[in-house]
Image (cartoon, rainbow, N blue to C red):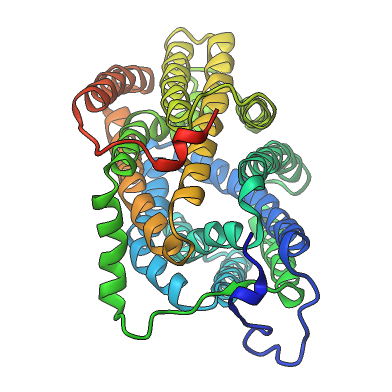
Amino acid sequence: MTTTQDFQTHSTISGMSGIRNRYVGLSAYALFWFGQLVSFLGSSIVQFVLIWWITITTQSAFYLGLGSFLAFGTMTVIMPFAGVLVDRWPRKLVLAGADGLQALVTLGVIYLFYINRATVGVILIMITIRGILAGFHSPAFQAVIPLLVPAQHLEKINSLGFVADALTNIIGPILGAVVINIFTIERMGDILWIDMLTFLVALLPLIFIAIPFQGKDEESTYFEELKQGVSYLKNHQFLFKIIIGFSVMNLFATSTVILLPLIISSPNYFNGNENLLSWMIVINQVGGIIGALFMTFYPIFKNHITGIRVGIMLVFIGAGLIGIGALFINIIALSLGLAILGFGFPVALISAQTLYHKEIPKQLHGRVISASLFIAQIFAAIGMYLVGILAQEYGLATIILSFQVAGVSLYLLTQLFVKSNGEPLREQTLS
C-alpha cells in the first residue's frame, strides 16, 4: 500500500497557505470524491438543459454533433499534453485550477444570458473551453485514485464510483426537466448558477485533503515525458489492442447516442418533450448502475480483458436496438437498447480502469492514461461530428443501424487479426 510518507506532499493550494491537510488515504478520497460528485451532479443538470436548449433552438442533428465534437475533440486533443503536466504538477493544484476556471467560464455565460447576448455560438465556445479544462481534470482525477486507494480495493472503488456517477446522471436529467418546468428554458441565466455553485463545492474538499505528489524527474524534459506515455503503450501491445477496441466502439456506437434528443423531440419519431428525454436517460443510467453493481459483487470474468470484450459487444447490441426503436418508433426497443448500452459500458470501462490502475506505474499514470484516452476519444469526437452530418442527410435510424453493422464487423476483425505481445502479468492471477 502506498502511503503519504512515500512521497513529497503538498499541503496547500496556491493562495491557501497555512491551511493544514486533515485527511489522508481513503478518508481523503471519500471527501474528495464527495466534492467531485456534487460537481458532477450540477454538470449533469446543466448538460441536460443545454442539450435541450440546443435541440429546441436549432432542431438540427448537425449542431448536436458539432457541440459534442467540440466538447470531446478539444478535451481529446489537449489530454496527452495535459497528462504530462499532471505528472509534473501537484494534482491537487490541477484539479482546483480546472474546477475554478470552469466556474469562471460559466459565470461569464450567465452574464451573457442576462443581457440577452447568448447565442448558439456562445454556447459552443463555452463547451469548447470546458472541454479544454476537462482535458486537464480527467487525467488528474484518474491519477489521484491509485494514490489514495489501496490496490486491493481498486476494482470496488472504481465500480462504486461508476454507480455514483450513474446515479448523478439519473438524478441530473430528472432535476433538469424539473428546473426547465420551474424556470422555463428562456431563463438559462438562472439555471446556469447551479453549475457554478457546484463547481465551488468541488473546490472545498481540496483544502483539507492530502494528495501524494511524486514529483517530476528533474532529468526529463516535457517532451521526453510525453514520449514515455506513447512508448509505454507501444511496448505493452495488449493495452494498445484494448484501445483499438474502445476506439471502434466510440466511433460507431457511443457517437450515435448524441442523436437521442432529436429522436425524442422530432415529429418524425417520438415527438416528445424534455420529460420523455429525461426518462430515457434515466433508463440508460439505471442500466449503468446495474452493470457497475454486477462488476462489484459478481466478478465472473476470468480476467479484465474478457470483461472489456463482453462490455463492448453489449454496447453495440444496445446501440443497434436504439436504431431499431427509432426506425419503428417503438419505445420498448428504444428503452431496452438504452438499458443494454448502459449495462455494457461499465462492464467494459471498469475492467479497463482496474487493469490500467494495476498495470501502469503510478508515476506514469497521467501521461499513459492521457495517451490512451486521446486515441480512444478522438474517434468518439470524429464519430459525433460524422453522425451529425450524415443523420441530417440520410435520417437518424438509418445512420444508427448502419454504424452498428460497420462497428461490430470492424471490432471483430481487429480482435481477431491485431496481434499483441501477450497478456498483462497480473491478469494471470485473476480469477
